Image (tube, rainbow, N blue to C red):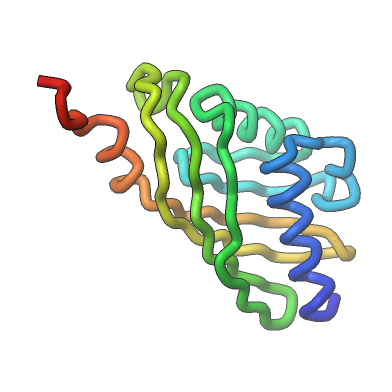
Length: 141
């Protein structure tokens, strides 16, 4: 894959699978044996494993959105700098939904095989996320 093709595929990964939650193209985007290492400290394998992981995130943040800020590609690897946003509606990390908006940064590292994504490592700023979920908001006293 050339650099532009890998960038287009990562855009589809975030837009189709995450932001639109449209799993109909999963076979075009991810290899059947996809290895996904998410920032929730959960590893997922295969299309079903990835879908389960994505739905776990959606249960906590129904409006979860990924914004690509920058991508850097070399050979069969690509790194994407991201901003994640959403509203905390369901339990995550043992914290029940607060209704608070969240915004934090992360990086996705991708490996490609057979013109699809075969491995993903996501490193999200969990500390920033946890602070937003657990710190009292003004007026909570």
